[in-house]
Image 1 (tube, rainbow, N blue to C red):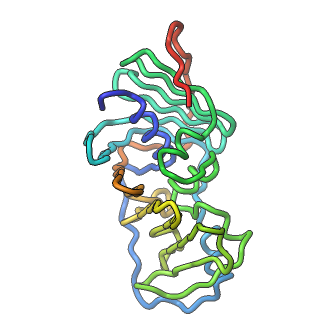
Image 2: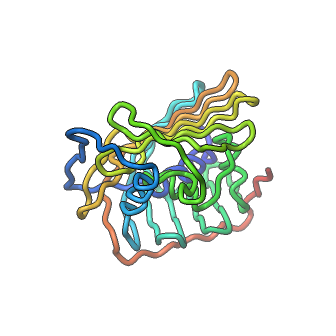
Length: 256
């Protein structure tokens, strides 16, 4: 990319997407069971990913209609605590905790330290650490246990819609009928003509757990569309990880 800011922002979106060298695709088969909405949601949370740390690499494709780029990121993560990303030759590094987002860019000697506003503006919907994590490991972005939903069987999936949604904000969560992970989630702001779509075309089995094999993120608004595709490489779980990160002196701060 022409500058490291886009790499950093895209990196934040894929912090929790992982794969494995030796995996098999998890596919839905057979007839879809006619379950209650309560049991569908319960099964979704029973299948949450169980891990302590992640280390690996990921291949990312980015396209906003004007710029089209591909790049590789190295990833180190401790669940719910710290996330570290580094582009080739450490030209761009990202470090995120639940309370702060930081990155620096050696290409133009700039850095950023702040909250999730930059990422939220990029996708057009309010995000925090937990929502990003949920989005990227195949969990529902919002806590389904805290609301009442209606469900129906649709194309061998369970489609969930809130009985009472936010004002001017529509949500749809589609769960796979086999392992109950998210196949698609859509967040639509009709008044502002914004639509965020996150799709999980395939899942794979890693250490006996279903995990996204790939992910496609599309952010749409008036006269603008951004897509991000991720492929996962050389991922390992539960190894010891460190998070070296220090903003170089003399860099210029990016203000929002």
